[in-house]
Every structure is written in structure tokens, then in C-alpha cells.
Length: 50
Image 1 (cartoon, one colour):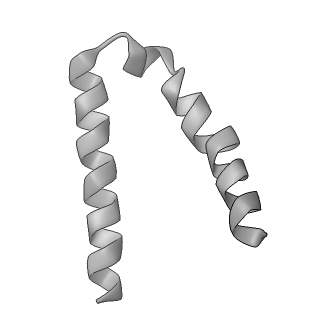
Image 2 (cartoon, helix red, strand yellow):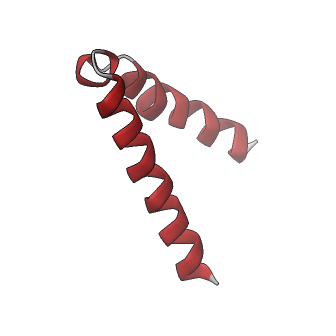
């Protein structure tokens, strides 16, 4: 149950606002740059756990 609540909160307050952010929706280059930065952040977090 906790996972469902966290998933909903993540979608509602993180994913949806970023998806509609005018800066990212107006530029493909900025969208991909943000994607790469996000992937790097997740990769660093995973590497820190290993």
C-alpha cells in the first residue's frame, strides 16, 4: 500500500509538472539534456549504493 501512495505522489508532484514545463516542451535539445542529467543522477545514486 505504501508503494502505491508513493507512486501516486511521485507522479502527481514530480512527473506531471515536469512533463508540462514550458521550457522542456518547447525545446527538444533541453528535453534530452534534462533526460541525460536525470539518468546520470540515478546512475550515481545506484553506484553509491553498490
